[in-house]
Amino acid sequence: MNLYNVVDQIEKLDPDMSGRLDGRRAALKQFTSFAGKVALAAVPLSLGGMLKKAYGQSVTTVLDVLNYALTLEYLEAEFYTQAVASAGLIPAGAPTGAITTIRDHENAHVAFLRTAIQGAGGTPVNKPNFDFTAGGAFANVFSNYDTFLAVAQAFEDTGVRAYKGQAAKLISNNDVLTAALNIHSVEARHASHIRQMRRARGAAVKPWITGKDLGGLPAATAAIYAGEENATQAGVEITNINGMSISMDDATEAFDEPLTEQQVLAIVRPFIR
Image (cartoon, rainbow, N blue to C red; front, side):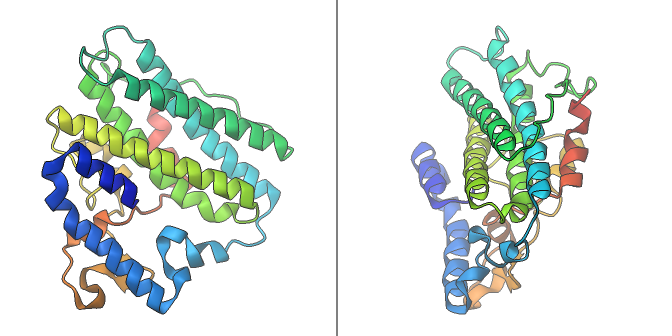
């Protein structure tokens, strides 16, 4: 969600957003410039020092992470599969192809993770049974398009932070780490696109996370955005980087924060039977 090409695409899709990108882009650019002068390894976008702490992780650890990721991908793949199959959910004129494409991506992620786990000598976890109404909290998730998009945003924003939270544990396997980061980038594009779709329908939401703002979601989703108000990266206070005055919103928008496995499981548990 924090890549320059995503920002560029947003500018093309929504010219009115262009002015709002300046501060966020400046925060990224100034941090990257500053970090380059201090130490390239300090740049969070390259994971840098965070990954160095995880050398020597066991195969068991890697398999645990992959099965954890597989559970999340099962959830997203099933969610979009059911959505595409729900007659009347996507209204005429809405970008049906986007939801179908996201469904295909998520199913591809499931297939990859299952293959990776088996290739490492592990056993993929079974797909859980899901309740996408979360016990009735989102009873019309597959009949009301706006409810569906809101839940989709919740899942995608969680997925982005979940992958970032586990990346360090995959350092012992370069191929798996690279693939996981590629999935992370796809999830980020999904999150941005879903947010854009909600914005086009009148939701007061940006294409990225601002602080711990819920992006128009119910108060019950607060755990998804906990910690996103952080404005310090690699010990550097972004709001005053290189003597510049960067707003708190711009500083927090420039970086996504990781979620722990325990935090993510608590978020998705209401959707698992």
